[in-house]
Length: 307
Image (cartoon, rainbow, N blue to C red; front, side, top):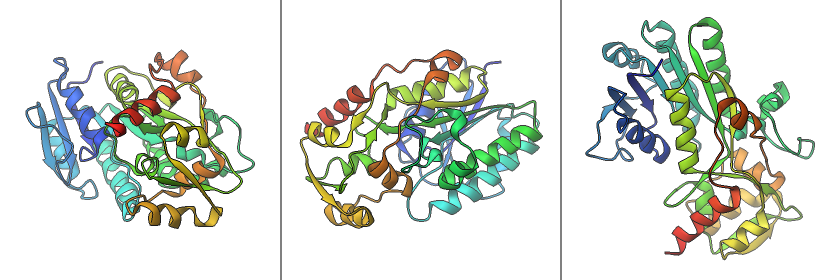
């Protein structure tokens, strides 16, 4: 059944804000509510109804009930200082509201490939089935959020749950820790390592999320562009200079080099051990093939930075 009233969390971020605006262009969707503590990324002049609210507040249930929301898109999970409480407590409050709601029938969770962790003994390519307990312990907030969502689906078997595990999102005008990292004139790398990295272009990430909202496609799906880049290749393509440092100093080195680069633990592991996800289920079961390869997505970002 097609959604009629959609609530999107995290619209102050680029992905959440653009997703809400994209959904508002769909004439089959009657209302789109964008929820966050600040408007920021929600374009003005769209049909998006901005709701200034903190999902950690139990009153989020009133927003859902009063609007008779049938589809909730949880795009709020973030990284960085202070994000733990927002991610975990906010998710708990939001999902509790979904559980009690008489109108919510679908939940779409924007997750990340960081749930797989990474390390010397990790698989060369992660499938959706690789998120076992050992991996979950390394997956941080994202793994915890997924666990809450799966618990809700068990308690509400009538609910359609789709979890989208995104590779690192990149593209023109994307401002996140990794795009700032690749914009540094001297890019700190882990001495003795050359990680394999995989990206998803923001247009593909948005298309996958929109398809999950407008179609009933329950399950967990990896989302990433075809192919990989070695970290050294990516740095060269960006026209930057690698600066090898000991692994223990990669975080401080990036902060010293650029000031605004704050890598999450998962991103720090990515830069040392790499992470590649299998997207077979995305293509065969979900019915979507990314238009942008990893290399093409990265080059699109590089072209935008060079302008």
